[in-house]
Image 1 (cartoon, rainbow, N blue to C red):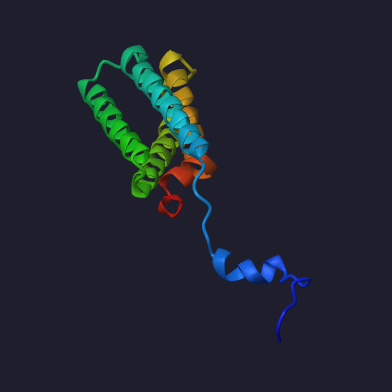
Image 2 (tube, rainbow, N blue to C red):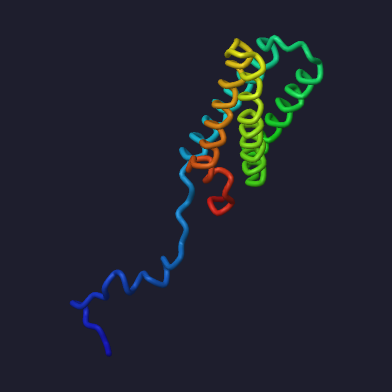
Length: 153
C-alpha cells in the first residue's frame, strides 16, 4: 500500500526500531553528588577515629592499633567506592554493621561494670550510632548506588 504525500506515518511506529532499548547517558551531577557524599563520609569516619584514638581514657596499645588499622582499611574501601567498585561498598557496609553489633554487645556490659555512663562509654555510643548511620546511608543512597553500578557507564 503506497502512501500519498498527505499521509504521514505515526512517529511511534517509524522510530520504534531506532529507539528500542536505548539507555540514557548518566547525568554527570549524580556522580559528583555521590563523590561529595563520599568525601563527607570520609571526614565523618576520620572524626570518629580521632575521637576513639585521642579521647578514650583507655591507654591500651592494642585498641589504638586496632583503631588505626580500621581507619586505614575504611579509607582504602572508600577510595575503592570512589573508583566505582561495587564490592567495596558491600564490604564497607559489612564492616560498619559488624562494628555496630560489637558495640551493641560491648557497651551494655561496660555500663554494668562501670555503673554509670562516663566519657569513654559516651564516645563509644556516639561512634556506634555514627557508624550505623553511615552504613544505612551507604545502603540506601541512590547516588552511591549509581556510582558503583556499571550499568551507568
